[in-house]
Length: 313
Length: 323
Image: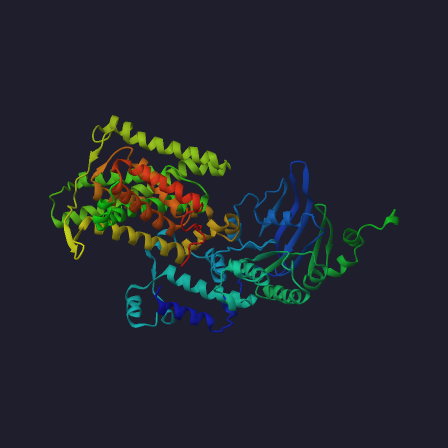
């Protein structure tokens, strides 16, 4: 890449387009239909029962909270949903199709993405590149196509390079699909960084970013894979109240883009404030389900979080 | 000890060293890429190179190219041999991955099992060329050194004035060829979509697959690319040395592996640095002391460098290599 083209790309990135069309989700499903079904799932590791007959569903277009005390099985449940573990009993269905035993990258292609409780970015890549890895999941170029740039397409007028000789060459030979996808991916990734609010440090290595930026970068990377369902694993861990407030806004905006959101969270205030429905786990079993109001008033939930009063019996 | 011999012929020795080092570096890329992604030393890689040299011989024999051929024939035969060697080496590397490593990976075998399997594959390939093919096809297969026609005859292209160093066409081909291939690979890994996938898997395989990167495809890709680079090295080697043998891969593979470790295994640019460094050290040391001890010098250098820099000269990972 020549210096000149580099600056051209960068100039394009810096243009504050705020073009939501680039990152909006277009799905065929209807809001409210069942998107993911956790159907009586039990998961055992040796003698330990990590999940015991857990049963709930996620509906398209909602923000569902999954809460519970430490060790309640929230993350295990998550891992089962993203194909890391296979349930011992029961089924997990996404859009009616069973996903147990499907490879993680295939589950991602089906439309489920996640972030991690302990941040797991690609530390030696820039923020922008991290997001582009996510975008790549949706691209079509083959190995041969990338290596030899075989698949040529006739570019639209505004996709032609600006300078003379490149422009003429592109007009005659077309542009490889890889180049177009790469450019589109770059634009989209930049837009996602802007969406989560960290575009100012797009070219910094992920490991050098401040903690809050890293958390947001994880969300942007997950969104880049165009997930119908995005699962956020304790997105507010380590955030101060102001940052939590921001995050609640971000979660709502993610839903407004057309994604369905599942949030695992400790912080009751955040969960009660942002979710439409909540599922409560304790010791691997579901103990409650309902709207934030219902759950907040449920005595079992209060007991699970605050402990049983001694004189309860 | 004859330091005068080194000093008086410094220019010539340096050119020799760079030539030799370029070939080491190209083979080293295969070790380093597979290590970067899988944390595995693919000991069968030396035989991937060996298969390449035999392919060159096969192509020359098939189209009847010899040392006296005309210019068109020389260019055509060399290009054809290059492509064939790249395909054959990449195919061999991919076959080893598919037949030997993949089933182990599916069963979650421990790392040591992969190592011993690689050594096993290496031995099988050696014996295929040393014994099995001999039984079916007779000569030239077998346990002897085979001459490859010097299709590209060595000619002096220009002489560097001042030092009076004659630079031949074969050396230009080897050095330029190796550098071009390495730049292309570096650009591919750092700039393309698939290269980004390779780096993602090298940095965190589990997260990469959760983000939709197909890990199996990345693994296939690094074997194919590493194999193709070994194929290029095989052609360049035959251009310089005009021979092949059933076990030719052993010592070259070992040197290339040394080069990869010297430069920092898992690091593409480290392979280049390590290869050139090793090549030059070998030639210099051979000029000062006895040239029959070449291999000893190479490994002494390895031991000494690792004592002071255990992670190699550049000491980065494949994931880290970036523009």
